[in-house]
Image (cartoon, rainbow, N blue to C red; front, side, top):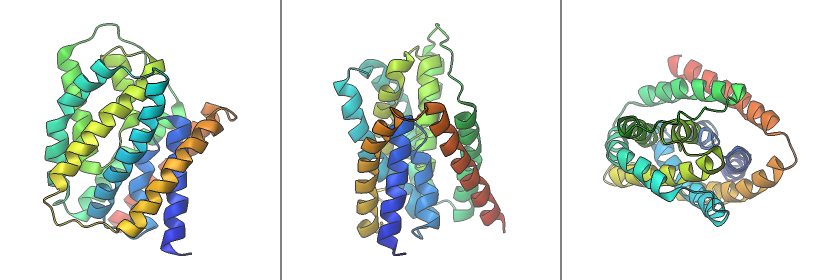
Length: 247
């Protein structure tokens, strides 16, 4: 199977997850780039940021048309993460591949468990500026360092810390993710990491198309079934990455 076909299949799978679940799909991007397309961890995390920006922007436009984005809350949350995202993005390109792989595997395990449990966060009701800043900064650092969108972290944080209703949390999280990913990309611009654009571009195109199909799929299949299926896939990937890195 050629690399181009693998890029299209992987991109469609990521897009399908993002479109059907709203969060959690982009975390599959990095392992797909590493193990299917042969990217190094530094290349994969950088390419993942590009893919996250484009696919999240496409999804954000759809949510904005539906009025499901809290712009003020999202921008405030994103502002707290810009500097951490840029700093983490600059550091990530210089971190050994083993460290990046293990860090990603460690993050993927709780993400998979969250998808498998499918617990809806409870609204706290009391919005703390300090907690909001800390949560925004933490999400920015994760996005910048590992190249993941972090929707599985952003959605519950927006609900519990900023009291954003669940109906607007996914759309608002996309705004935060885009801002953090762009900040991390700017920080990585001066690094020596180069991307294989003939593979990245088809991956992006398939992800965008997959996201539209995912939204249609979510209307036909139970969200619980979809989330558990992708949770199992992510857990398998996380364990495989950890084992492979430690060999």
